[in-house]
Structures are given as C-alpha cells and as structure tokens.
Image (tube, rainbow, N blue to C red):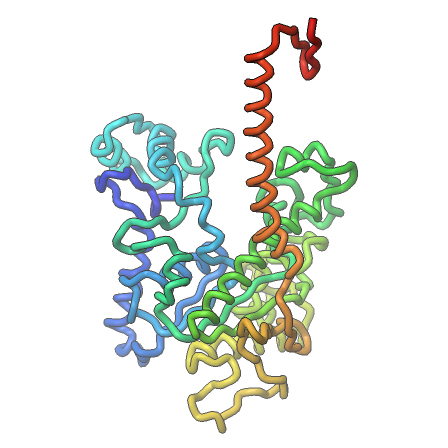
Length: 407
C-alpha cells in the first residue's frame, strides 16, 4: 500500500511505487555493463502483482528505453481497473489506522513519515475488509501513466516488441486459501454452501460452490490474459503465450492436494526449486519436495525458455544465430500467438502446442453478456422505481410489504 498512497493534491503523489521500480531500471541501465551485461538486452518479469507492474512499465512513456523484453506471469494491468478509485479515501483511512488522524494532507504525510515500519505494517494488516478494500494500484497521474492502461495499449503505446505471457488453469483456488475459505493442509477442500457463496459473490442453487467460486476468479485472470494478448497482436507485437497445466507434486502453498495448477505454482519451476535438495534452513515450500527427475527436467526446460527469451526475445533461441538451436528435448517450436492463430504452449511434460482461445465461452460471458445483464438489471430497477412512484402518486390504497390493495 505504501507505494500507492495518494492524497490527491500532490502532497503525496500517486504511483510512487512505480517510480521506485523505474529508478531500479535506470540503475540497471547505468551499471549492468560493469557486471558483464548488455543494457540493450534487459528483460523484466514478474508474477501476479509483479506481472501487473511489468504491464504498467510496458505502457508508461517514462519507462521507454529502460528494457527491451517483458515476461508476465498471471498478473496484468487489465486486472487492476477496480483499484483506480478511492485511493485518496484509502490513504486517509490508512492514516487513521496508524494514529495519524488528520484531514489535512501535509499533517497526514508528516505524521506518516514519523511512524516506524512496524507501525505502518501493522496499520495495513489491521485494515478491516469491511471498512476499506486494501487493494491498491497504479492510476492515471499525467506523468507515469498519462492515460488509462487499456487506452495506451489500444493506441499501440507499448515499449517493447516481444512479450512472453501466460497463466494457470486453476488460478482461483489460491485465492480461496488467501480468503481463508480453504486450508493449506492436506485435507479435502471444504464445502461452500449457497449462503456462503452469496456472501462472496452471487446467488445460485444449493450445493458445493467452492470450485465455482475458484473458476470465477480464474476467469478474471485468463480473460485478462486473452485481452492483453489480443491488444498486443493488434499493435503488431510478438506474444509467446503459455498455460502452465502441470500440477506440482508439492504445492508452493503448502501440503494441500486439491488446488491443482493454481496461482503462484509456476514460480518454483522458473527458479529451479525441483533441482534443489532439501536444506534444514531452506524454504520448506520451495525445495526438497518435488518428484525427482521428471519435475527437474520440466523446471530446466521452463528456465531454458525464460532465459532464451531474455537473451533473444524468442523462447526457442539461445542465440541470434538460428543455427544455434537450444532444444535438448527435441520439442516442437513455441509458436507466437496472433489473433488469427491463437497458439499457446502448455507447460507440462511434453510441452505441447495448443491452438484456440483459452476459456473462450467463459470470457465471452464476462466481456459481452454479463455487462449487458448488469446494464439491463439497472434499467429494470429504475423502471421499477418509476412505476412505484407512479402508483404512489395516483393511488389512495394501502400497501403491506410487496402487496398493495386498493380500497
């Protein structure tokens, strides 16, 4: 939250977290050569909120020229549209939570600067979800972000030519754990009743709605990946799309078995955790728990794809010389995604190439049907209110609840 507090009057400017990241990219440009690196071949990558940050750097004019490739795992800016409102209110609510109860921006900022990091952390963690949504994000500020992220992409204002992008087929299960609807222990997932489901989202019939809720969360990720890829293709950029379908033998979330290929499960494979032996002082969720040679080979190939892309902008090539093929597993070529040929690579044993729009039916519902349903429901509510006003204006009857009897 500290990187995105905003008083709305310049006393605490918006998007400071993005400017911090930009400073790091500037440092890399100025110093990477001293480490044997090439400032003209810098690739940034991130997962979840990190992927969202990468997406904002992709469209910010202030980040142009600071990198030439980008990898986005799960997150992107299209997921953050709900975070661009009420940041000023959230900032003052956060201030009150750490004992800085001021209505004046300068006094608020001066007080926050006097708080320890422990007090700031505790203040954030103690924010009640019933009082304020703790989610924050990058907003249009006229500097780092001159326009909405989607508008910049539609105009082709994209800072690189090559992007590697993807998600997992059961992203949403992770958020059932984060939302404390399910445990990380090796026990069957709980039953989510219709009443609990209503409290989380919408109405439905009786039964277990836990996976249905996870599916809806997953749709938000997958559909935003599809939209992002479409926009990149429209702009003439090259997109290498993936879906990590491999179900890990050990979840990064803990001993649980039911979540499948969910959010964050790609991270251990990108960083080679299946190749590590367990250490007594090591991270228990990241090393020593994977199933031997097969998962180690899977991780090696994923790392090969990522490093190839960082070197050449193409996950198939480790060198700009196409004769230097880096394909020890003799895999079929990773074809780029286009709107006409929506290829994507499955990250699982075999690394198969698939063609088709992921979750096309669900994404059509969320992007085309659901907005119309919402608009029509508002129109029906307005019509109902108008009819009620007309009845009240022309009736001398008495009403009891939903029924009204004329005398």
